[in-house]
Length: 315
Ligand SMILES: *[C@@H]1O[C@H](CO)[C@@H](O)[C@H](O)[C@H]1NC(C)=O
Ligand SMILES: *[C@@H]1O[C@H](CO)[C@@H](O)[C@H](O)[C@H]1NC(C)=O
Ligand SMILES: *[C@@H]1O[C@H](CO)[C@@H](O)[C@H](O)[C@H]1NC(C)=O
Image (cartoon, rainbow, N blue to C red; front, side, top):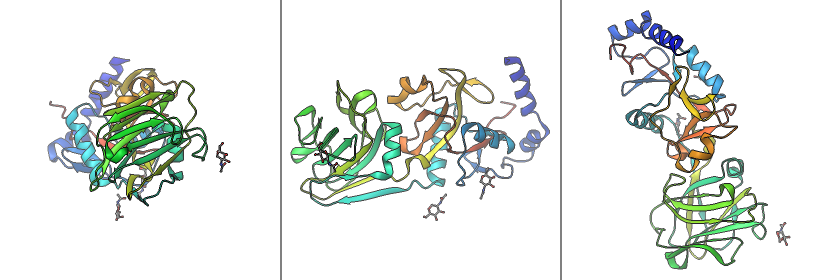
């Protein structure tokens, strides 16, 4: 198997096209855009399953994106930031304690079991994680920056006693601050920042947990603004990583080089990398470009790369 690959790579690198590309100049072949030494395809709205994305890139005599070092990860992040719109929604809530369910995120919430959002407001950002679209029944309530922005709590129902508490001043009256909430396996976690699983400040495991199907948000006695990705799935891109050959062992396809440099989303590492249903790697602007193992048959955006300018056969 390995020997066949070596020959394949050899032929690929020394094909006439590649030699010409190297000898003539460092521009990219048709359909690819040069970005910091990488030849990448620009977006269109096409979304494909992982196998189809891989095949489409090969039809263009390229590959799906492989990320084998931190510098390339950074370059790809910048490319996506420059070339793709991440449409964000801002909701301004009146100074009233009343939950607004965000229905456009319901599918995402049910599948991913976490959410990231930015909040601007002086105090009391309330959110509710409900099984039904009813905040009085089977709901976890999370208060960020309550009690005059001095304390946050997790509750197992609306206005019930706290199950977890943090003493801090997380909110700002004038600028958006990033937060995330996750509830996988019945453990409610709340943290600061855009990386789900990092910066946790509260955590509580419900011994009798209920599913979360709806997310509601509310303010208390001041105006608050909430900001989130309108369509989080639209900012996901397939990478060439997969563990389809050996479950739990991630490789870059089609070369089958092992994934050595890693950038997995922290909270997901164990559960997703060994998941029975998630064998293909994607990264999302939404998750701060961390990698997530995903169901290969989901339709996602993707970027193809032409390797001739990024990898020289002469080292
Ligand atoms: C979008 O990408 C697909 C697949 O690469 C290609 O077939 C199609 O022509 C592209 N459309 C546009 C408008 O570029
Ligand atoms: C991004 O949004 C702007 C303004 O809405 C639009 O003109 C542009 O075509 C969009 N770019 C992409 C890559 O979707
Ligand atoms: C919400 O749940 C409460 C408590 O179970 C119930 O009394 C109420 O009728 C429910 N409201 C709706 C709109 O279903």
